Amino acid sequence: MSSPQGTGLVESSDLIVGPAAPADLLEAEAVMREVLRTDLGGYREQWHRDLDDLEAAYLRRPGCVLLVARDVAGVVGTAAVKPCVLTSPPNPEWLAREYNRPEVCQLVRVWVARRARRRGVGRALAGRAVAWSAGPGGYRRVYLHTDAGVPGAEAFWRSMPTREIHDARPDPFHTVHFEIDVDAVLRAPGC
Ligand SMILES: CC(C)(COP(=O)(O)OP(=O)(O)OC[C@H]1O[C@@H](n2cnc3c(N)ncnc32)[C@H](O)[C@@H]1OP(=O)(O)O)[C@@H](O)C(=O)NCCC(=O)NCCS
Image (tube, rainbow, N blue to C red; front, side, top):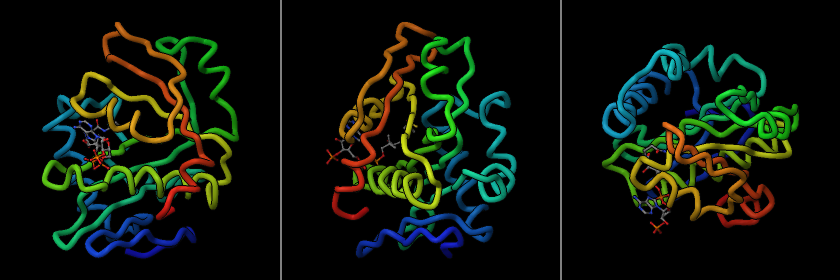
């Protein structure tokens, strides 16, 4: 795995997190499709088209990055950053107005393979994604939303330095919107 966009790698004894190079994409896609299948109800074209061409979606688009986490067995998780572009509806107009700004990015695809969970992989990916956003990405704020109906997803984000900005439940997707406290993440060890 190389670091073409200048972000250093987060390393521990058995985990490396950093920006994906073209050679990482097949493995990354396999993990993403596995998480989609096992946790998120499967691929849906209207939401998951980025998986069909990760290179175009994240490696060749300005303001975007795909991060991968590797252990000895290979890629075990992903996270991606892209410019924040919220549509309204389904999102409230005030939310789109507040977050659709050039200084805001959206954190997406924080997905960890089941075999690697509860080892800090998700936290390391999110931390690295925030560090990239505030560094090479040139963003100042990081937005995300999650499907709180997915076991562990809401607890994961609430365990991070996040601020809930809107709980859209009972919408069909159990959506909770968060902003990450960028400074708090950057102060955390390992970033
Ligand atoms: C949510 C997800 C990314 C967490 O990845 P992970 O590598 O297991 O998370 P971490 O090990 O870094 O966990 C960090 C903290 O989050 C919380 N957490 C994570 N998974 C949890 C779960 N299933 N139940 C309760 N708390 C959980 C805990 O506080 C945990 O700290 P601890 O293990 O020290 O108690 C992973 O379960 C996943 O990929 N889920 C499916 C896809 C998804 O919903 N992604 C998030 C929305 S984009």
